[in-house]
Image (cartoon, rainbow, N blue to C red; front, side):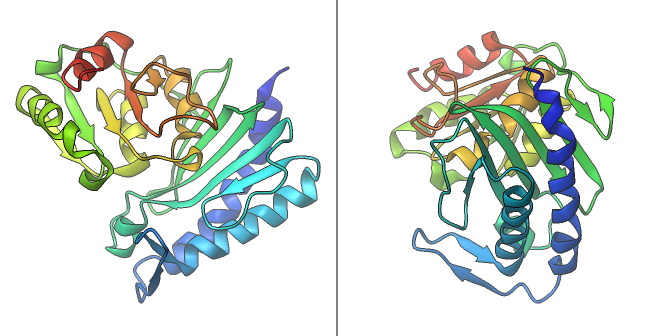
Length: 256
């Protein structure tokens, strides 16, 4: 089937999320801590409730999986996977590098993805079988350089296991530019040729689902550290790169 048929509705969901995120950005910064110690804001909850209501109305046969609420019909063929504010810590700190992530999974694997940055008015749209776009224009990863000439993003330090630290230190020592904890925005930059490699771990489907069609539709590589296709069932590791060879070169430092 042509998954592009679902892209307009995915964009409608992103349009619904934008004013809610904007209304809470750089306000009081009030939040609660979830059981895992991560923060959740009123914006997270309001966006997810709004998007769930829209999905139920438009596609009652589809499932929903979101970060803040319980799963609904996730055994359905199509499941919408939502992260209302990816990068909540940055959102609370007033950094405009968070994003709303919207993905559509078919039979457990992502086929449509959106990164929406409402403050900067930026949107990446990926769809299996189609070229990824940024604000409506096709984009492409850049020719992946050697690791020694790469711009690398590494995730939140606490997401990695302690045994990964030496390998990550080696990658940081080789790459001339290494930055940290840029959440979904790093993947958007990679898709448009502004970065070369992103490594994270301890992720859930709502963290990476939207990223897979975006990276692949821009000509890049996206997989678990073990090379598996990221679906509902993974080990939570994730790597994205301009091409597979660069990803593999980095992962060798992690013993993968």
